[in-house]
Image (cartoon, rainbow, N blue to C red; front, top):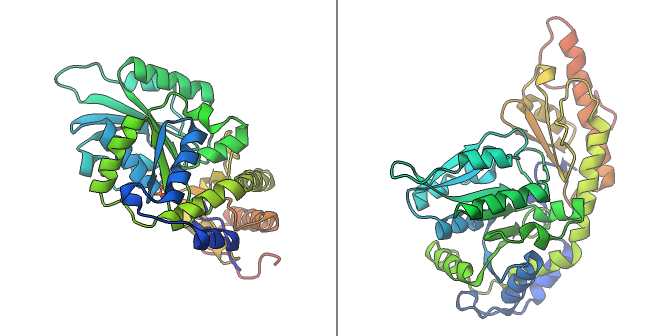
Length: 365
Ligand SMILES: *Cc1c(COP(=O)(O)O)cnc(C)c1O
């Protein structure tokens, strides 16, 4: 069986989750009368210390709606250049909101207070209006890095002092919570909008919950409806979310630990390069440039040994621990990655070597 570390989105609903979904009490979400969805929204809003919440089909819609509510056409938003919002949401801010994006250059998805300060524009008629700044906790494409609470708060306060809204893309906020022991509501305190994804490490088939003030959620609802995100008997889906909050948060700690184990096992592998921030949560990124092979070739070589990892760009590999891969699976994956690196490294030393896939049977099963 494949050890799938491609993404924590690949998780499948567990038997217990499916049972909870089957038993869910339901109503009409669109009119606010689905009791299970309402319970989920209240639960997440309380977790984040926010006044209210709204159930969304996806994290992508949470980001988009947060932008649509808190900006107007011609505004500019600020985020990091590795962010999901900037790279993999089909330019929704531009396409639907008429909003431009100022991506701040970062190595591991963290920008500094000084960068934020420099990015916020001085109001003048020739410039776009800086309207919203976004922080991705934890970072997705740059290795699950965890933002420091003090830096987040300093950026939030800076934003507010300039009349700008502060947003948390908390797709994996709970991975940060279990990694640091800092409560979700401490991270979200004072931010204008924040959300968590249910379909990543929490293992739900679908959904995310977007939170903010009561007024924010009124406007978020209008956009959700307009974009076609309003639902009917969504309690079936919300029940999966409630089940995950009851049963899968401890699993996130296990995911973080498995990524940490993989990191420990492969950090000294020949030709692999890690950032000093690597291994902070459930995502582990490293570069294979030192092996003289592309990330795609490296991932393909691991795939032949039933380990699925993700190539990002030319050189980066992303490994994402998740609830479908246990400790033994993680250890096996680390062995395969290590052996793959060693094989490519020894070829790189041999003249006339090729960087094609590994010879079959070069790894112990
Ligand atoms: C997955 C992800 C999203 C989008 O969430 P979907 O539920 O897949 O739409 C947004 N931001 C980050 C950081 C993510 O990892």
